[in-house]
Length: 70
Image (cartoon, rainbow, N blue to C red; front, side):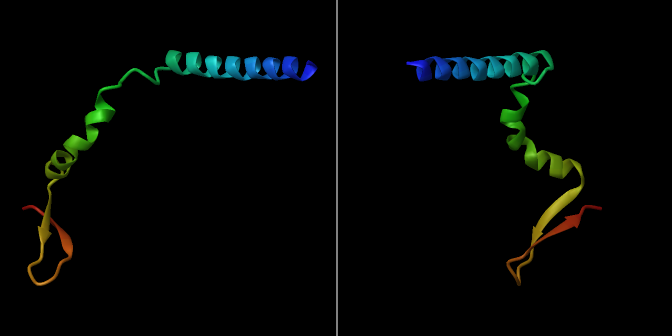
């Protein structure tokens, strides 16, 4: 029976630790922007195009080369 009391006490300490960590992360702004990360992969090609890089595939070989636009 004393083992149950010890395990309940330990689980409460762990739960309070997670609660403290969650409250600390919310106050420090970890969850402020929850839209941008979900759509960041959709805009990957635009960032490459904006930086002036163009992907070109050679007809003689199957290698992909990055060529800078002029």
